[in-house]
Length: 171
Image (tube, rainbow, N blue to C red; front, side, top):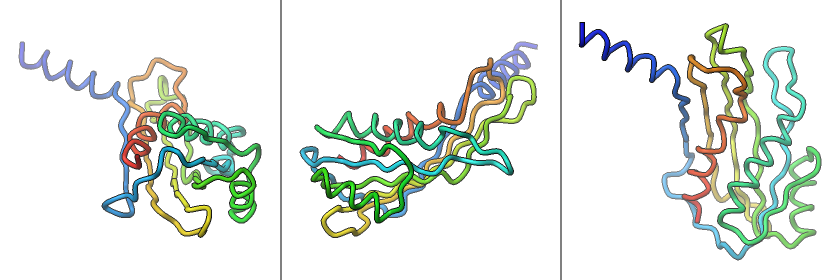
């Protein structure tokens, strides 16, 4: 009976936990200079099927800006979604060294507390050298909520921790 209680408790606690993965394209990232200015573009809003999650692009950009702000003296984010060339030009206009381009690959906001279906978020983050336009590093970050949530969770809540982990590896 005691073993059964321990297993049940472990199962419930693991169902509450969010999980994330970092899928790095290169094994060793190029180190960034903390003195360099970073410009973060705004990705298109995430969607799942026919549902578009308005504001998810800006939320994602803000999460990326926050993570880079812990390591770089100056980080600026875009105001609206731009093409790569427009983002590169904006980065050059402010004298940035690095352009960070997040792309939302998957965005699924579910009522997990009653449906049992977890929230999911998946983004690709690419870092470019502004002067050359060449990619320096990229990663795919995947997050999935636990099943036993108590409401109020959203896909953007799955991103800060793995984003901070990724950005720390760049400096």
